[in-house]
Amino acid sequence: MSSLIASRRYAWALLSAAEEGQFLDQATDALNSIKETLANSRDLVHVLRSPLINGDKKTHILEEVFKEIAGEKVMIFLRLLAHKKRAGQLPEIIGEYQKLLDEKNGVINVSINSAVMLSDEQAKDLVNKLANYTGKKVRAKMKLEEALLGGVTVKIEDTIIDGSVRHQLQMMKKFLLAGKL
Image (tube, rainbow, N blue to C red; front, side, top):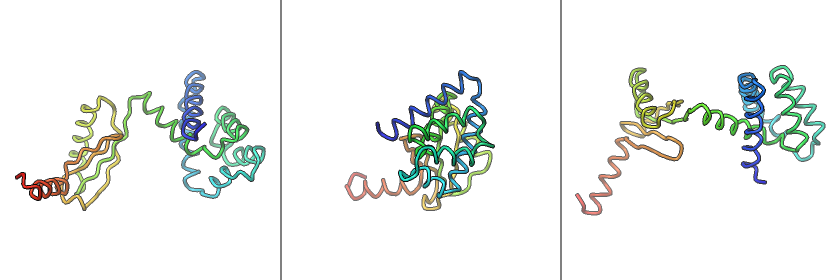
């Protein structure tokens, strides 16, 4: 089974169990804390992914590191991952869990790059327009990208909306070189 498919299945199993067991908020908070810990500790991720360290040792490591933040039900899940030799996929499983949770809640992640920093009002207006366009709640990640020269680019999943001056200049150049203008 591919790593992505397995990660999605484990994430879905945890999400389903958390919904049915009514501990969704606790599981989500715990996974966010675990994700942050893993992001700040390459060594821990390396240990979890190492084939040289057996499942019992990984279980012990997971318990020592996460017992305070995970809660009993998430710890059961972490033990299962170690037992099934999937502890090394924990970062990917958490990522898939977040995607599934966002999908369930109708949230879409959007990247917005702008040539200049947008004012709060402009950013809010753009997010509202994107919410109307997608029909979902928008979680926007704003980034300053001066190379755009002006305007914005918006990435919604696999779709890029390029309203930058740089793009318009490139298109104009293409038309001029092709003799179509």
